[in-house]
Image (cartoon, rainbow, N blue to C red; front, top):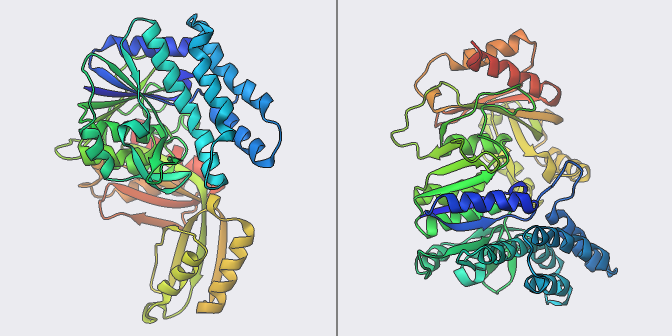
Length: 452
C-alpha cells in the first residue's frame, strides 16, 4: 500500500484535481490520499490558506466576514463545477465554512488553527465526493476519526506516539480509497491544532508510518529535488536518490520542496519517500531513503543557502576558564523564549546563530543589553545580514580535502567566510557568509563539484 500526498499547486483547480485522480487511478497500490489546501492557480493568485487566515482575522476583529467566505467557497465551487457536481453535493462544505465563527475555541490561537486547517479539510472532503461521483469507492477520514493526536501550541503542533497505535488499529478495506486532510491533528482536549506551515507533508509521513506503507509518494510541482536552487543556479542537476539525513540538512538551510519535520515519521518507520511531479508523473522524481547501505554517486549531493539568520558574536579573553559562561547566555535566550540554531566557539569567542524571523529589533536590543550586563564581554556584536550555506553529501564522509575544495572557489570570488563548521556525521559542512554573498557562494561551490 502507498500513501500519496498532493501539494497545494497539485490541487489548485479542476484540471489539477483531474491530474491527481489520474495519478491515483494509475496505480492500485495508491490507497491513502492526503490533500493540501488549494494553492495558487496563477502567479498573483492567493492560496486558500492565506484566505482562511484573513477570514480568521476578520472574525477576531468582529467585522463582517461574508465577503471573504464567498471568496473562499468560490475556489471549491470552481473545482466542483469542473466535475459537474450537483450543488447539493457541495452544501456540507458551504455549511461548515460558514459556521466556523460559531464554534467554541479556547482562545484566538485555537480559532486561527481551526480556520487554517479547513483548507485541507474541505479539499479532502471535496476529493472524496468527486472520486465517488466518478465511480470510485472513496471515504473521507478526519484526523479525529483516525486518531491523529497532537500536543504543542495550536499553530505548531507535534504528533504524539499514541497516534501510531491508533493508526495500526484503524480499520479499512483494500477496495476503498481513504482521503485524509493534511496539516492538522486533534489535541487531547479535542481541539484542532495545525503543524507548521507546509505540514501536509507531515500528515503524509505520519500516515505512511502508522499504516505501514511500502512507500510515501509526495506529489508537487517540480520534477525532482535539485542539487541547488534553480533560482540561484541555472539548470541544476536533479538528485535521483538521497538519504534522510541529507534531506534534513538541506531542508534546514532552505530546500523547501519537502518539509524537514516530515522526515521524522518516515525515518522512524523506515519508509522510503518519492518526491514527484503531479504534472509529469512518469518522471522518477527523487527517492529519499535510509542511509544504511546507501552508496553515494557524487561527493556532494546538494548545496543551499539560507538568508534568514543573524549572529551574535562575543569575544572575551579567558572565556574557556569561566565555568558557566555559555550557560548564563543561554539562560537569557531561554527567558525570552529564543532558541539558537548553532553555536560555534573558539578559545575566546562564541558565535550564536539565530533565526532572524523569530526575533524582532526590540528583542535584539533587550537580549544584547542583558548579555552585556550579565557576562561583560570584551566585544559584543550583532550581525544582522548573516547567511548559512550548507554543503551536504554522504560522499563527503570518507573524502579528504573537501573543505579545501569548498573554500577555494569562495576565495577566488573574494567571498568572506566568517564561520565554518562540520558536523560529527561528516556529511555536512556549514559555511557562514553575509547575505549579499550567499547566492555567489552557492554558485561557486556548485560549479566546483557539479560542472566539469
